Amino acid sequence: MYRILFVENNDAIRAGLMTALDYDALGFQPMAASGFTEGLRLSKALQPEVVLVDAHLDGDRGAELIRQLSVLCPGTIPCVLLSEAEFGRMRTFMRAGARDYLLQPVDWKVFLDFLRWALTEGIPSADLISSGEPDTDPVLGINYESLSRSTEKLISLVHTDYREALNLTELAATLGMSSKYIGRVFLKETGMRFSDYLMAWRMREARRLIQNSREKISVIAKLVGYSQPNTFYIHFRNYYGISPGALRSETPEENQEAENAQPIQL
Image 1 (cartoon, helix red, strand yellow):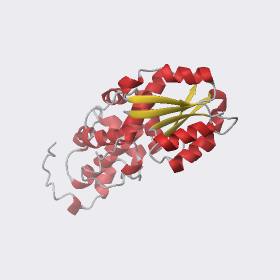
Image 2: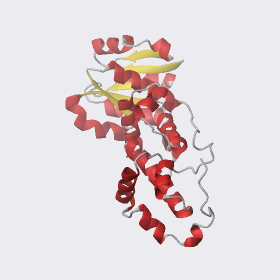
Image 3: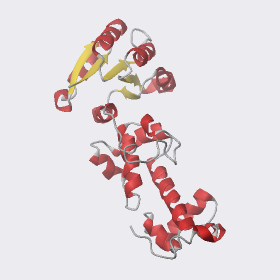
Image 4: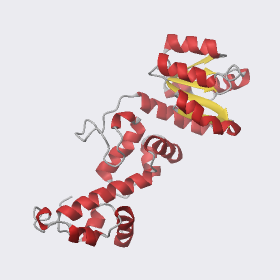
């Protein structure tokens, strides 16, 4: 059973958070603290997996508590609770160590998505590393160990299924999360939208095939997930600044001999 701690001054908000969801079914034990001192004490003693912190805790000590948690409770996932009017202060809380945020009034569907993400984040993952791939993603330049399990899982699916018609909504459903939420997490962690990452990976694979085979460009377009060759040509030129045909004409002949004009096997 995981622990979630709500550190909130307002009694009504704290009570609402404590009873909002079926925490037992989610695998969480909810706990509450009414102020900075109590929240810090319980966090140090119990090392909860998730701590939700009021931005205005004891006046304005929310960021301070999050900063303390990042040092004293390294396994904890802090989340800040703030109003939309305070969104401009988000950078302060992220610098302090907050991993995510919730806006008041709380959208319980978004809160549920956050908890599901927190569960996957807290489980050690080695989907990509154990598969024998390099530790650093060649598109992002980011070490896989720095990514949450949900983001890593999406990347792993792209690497294996990029030839298919991948849909973020369907992929998110397999992870038990909404596409809007998991898309936001992916963007925050990688700096890219999921659709842009998928296209970049397809472009990378297409370039490799163009340079190392004599397969027709139209066939390569299908091999990397494009049903419409014209769309592939546009994406490739925009991405690399050169057409697929021009790239092939620049490729030394010896790089193409290995395939000897044989069709590529999937």
